[in-house]
Every structure is written in structure tokens, then in C-alpha cells.
Amino acid sequence: MAKVLGLREQRVQFFYDTDFITSGETASTDTANYAVSQKNLFSDARAGNLLRTNLQGPGQLLSDQTFLTFAVRHEVMFYSVGGNSTLAGGGLTSAAELSIWTLSTSVFQFQVDTKIEFEGPLTMTPAGGGPWGFVSDSANPLITNGEPDAPSIYVLPLPIAITKRQAIAMIEKKFAWGGVDVAAAINDFEGGKLLRAYIDGYNTRDVQ
Picture 1 (cartoon, rainbow, N blue to C red):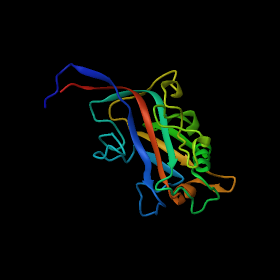
Picture 2: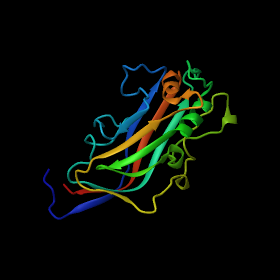
Picture 3: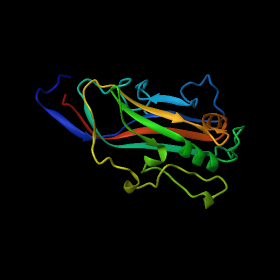
């Protein structure tokens, strides 16, 4: 379909990519879901599976699009599947401990083109809008990064602009600390596990 010259539309739309979404112990052969000390999301995103990403091309928006990033968000969940939520190793004993340890020892760097525009711990960028729970809710609690409401989202005082054809990446880093290798603990976890990164803001594109 031909573009309408001189006419562009602006929409509120976030973009996301997934570090891992799986259940059971994760083998290194499952490269899409294997947790490693550093993984660059968005850079290698593949369109076609909305469960993992809604980016239409690896590493950048389509050629006619620009984006103003007003929030960076992370969704982190570990939960029991079929009553199984044990860890095969890593020194941790429950989904709750793994959730807290992952949030406490993981950081991100949001890179546009060749510059790091925003960085910090995952705890600074809660998901908002997702499920959440207390440790005391049940024997197998669900813990995610932030309460499901808009005030949980940290909004940037100034937007981060992504212009046409600029490369984007969300560099996720997981550290070993206190005798726990958090990436190894994530891979050993026998329950369900999920980590997604979002950039949230205004998307501008041509009208067709």
C-alpha cells in the first residue's frame, strides 16, 4: 500500500523483547531462553512471534518510524508450574528468593546508536500493569517487578529520542554476588520464568 505523502500518525505504543520465557531447567542449547551474564535485547529481535517481541526488524525500527521513549520497563517473574518450583543448584531455595536475587543483582543499559542513554538496576524500572503478589500469599508466591498500576512506572523527566534507522539495544547484565551466580540459578530453576524489557512512549510512522 502506498504512503500518504506529508501525513504521519502518532500512537502510544511500547516495544518489547524477551530475555527468556520458559519453564523447567534450561539447557545451553536453548539459546533463546538460556540466561547468560549479558544479553543484548532488541539487537537480534526476530519478528513473527508476539510472545517474544513486537519489533518488526532486528536492532531498529522500520525506516519510516521514530520513537520518543518516556519509560523503560522490565517484567520479571518466577512461579511454580505443576507444583514444581525448586532449584537444581545455585544456593537458592525458592521462587521468592530467586525473584529477589535476580532483581537485586541485575542491571540494564539502554543504548541508542552507540551511546548509553539510560542505565541502572532492574528494580528502578518496574513493569507496572503486570501481576504481583506477597510472599505470604501462598507456599508458591508470584513475585513480579512492580505493582499493577501506572504509578509503579518510572517516567523519564526527559524523553529519549530514537530517530530513523538508529540502532537500539537493551543490554541486560546479571551478576554473581554473595556466592550466587544468578544466571546459573535462573537456568537451574525448574518452574516458570520470564524476563522482558520494554521501551514505552510515542511512536510516529507514515500513513499508508
